[in-house]
Length: 95
Image 1 (tube, rainbow, N blue to C red):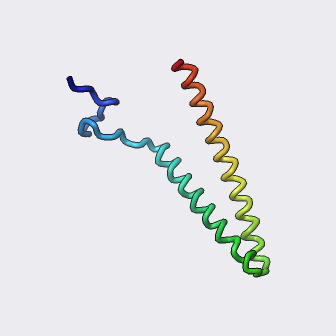
Image 2 (cartoon, rainbow, N blue to C red):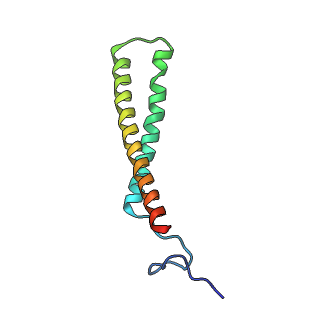
Image 3 (tube, rainbow, N blue to C red):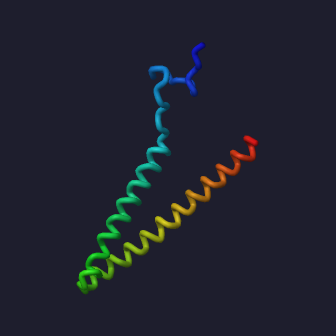
C-alpha cells in the first residue's frame, strides 16, 4: 500500500517534492539574515573601544549599534511570543 504525499503537489511539481516557500517565509528568512549580519557588524564595532581608539565617529557608530540591537531584540521577542502563542493554541486545539 502506497501512502499519499503529506500535501497535495502543485501543478508541474513532481510528487514528493517540497512545497514552494511562501513570499512571507522568504522575506522573514531575509530579515533574520540581515539581523544576524547586523549583530556581527555590531560586535566588530566594539573593537575601537577595546583598542582604546577615541573619536566622535566611533561613539556615533556605537550609538547606532545600540539602537539597532534594541530594535532587533524587540522584534525577536515579538517573534518568540507569537510562536509561543501559536504553539499553545495548537496544543489546545489538538488535545
